Image (tube, rainbow, N blue to C red; front, top):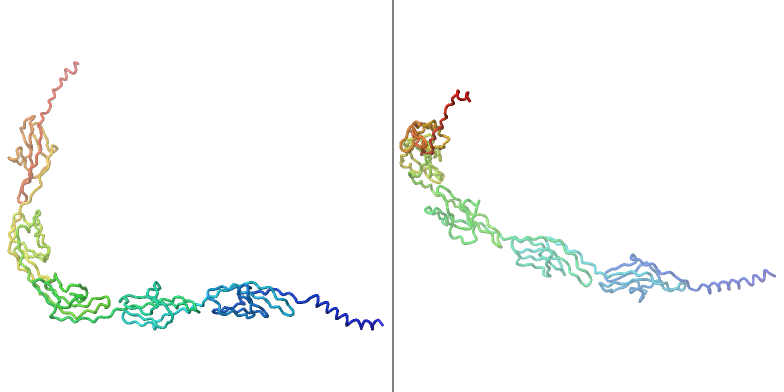
Length: 447
């Protein structure tokens, strides 16, 4: 009986339990999803949120929601607050919104351009850059920019550092600036001129050479191009020399310097040097030495024996000559690279004069007095005087007066080689010596 009642009540009990369970539970709560930057993909103006199912999506921090996980036609430069939440289902309630991830829509920069040689068309001083669209260009290493790809009237002989960058568009950002590419604006070349011989005129009267009828912007050379000058007149030329005349066109703002022309040679024949002339002013005697002056800038040789013997070139000093002897002097200019030798000068008779002596120096230290006798010491080959008129060889003067002042003169004697010297003198007073009375020995004993 009991088992029968249980079997009848069990299905009813199970139904009640299930009903009670569902009434107690209903829809379950869900946690907010966890949104990270790795769930978000940004391509140009589109944001795509990946990794969620049965979700709602917002780009304004939850103010508005959409079921599509893609946000399109967004605005460059704007920042969007992206979040996500799960939708309500039969089993679950709608979840709270996730954390917010800030996403900025930035234009993708254009690819950095690369400059190569084939991007340049150079025509003289005009440069055109090709191969780029929507670009800006610089010829001064990025200091200034232009939308024109043509640079005209550039300076010849100067190098330019070109750069390019792609400008911003509605969908892409500006590119980075390219690396610089250097282009040298080469000057045009000039052919060597032809130097005509008849235009190279030599004037031996004024010793110059003139190159006629080649106009301006020409350089001239007299040494085959080793040195140059802007004047077409070569001056201060020398006889006996050959000059290698050539010309070339000088460098200009647009053209390079040309090579040298052909060479035209011009030679000035040697001139004969004028015959030297000797005068007394050419001679300087120093003791027994004789110097012939006035010809130091000439290639001169000298003779003092009427041309029998000659010195080396420039050797104009003759030593240890004989005083009183007369020498027959001649001079000649020798042959040089530029001049022929001169004729020999006329003879000049030069007599070696006696040598002057320096005056002696006499002081009272040279005076020795012995009573009325004075001896003058300290001099050799000298003569002496009390009045500077009458002279004596003896250095002793006797019978002089006490308390008298005398002036004693001295000078060196002359001889075959030396003139008498000038005189010197000193005053000296003759002092009488004091007389001492003899002592009486007997008187000293008495005392």
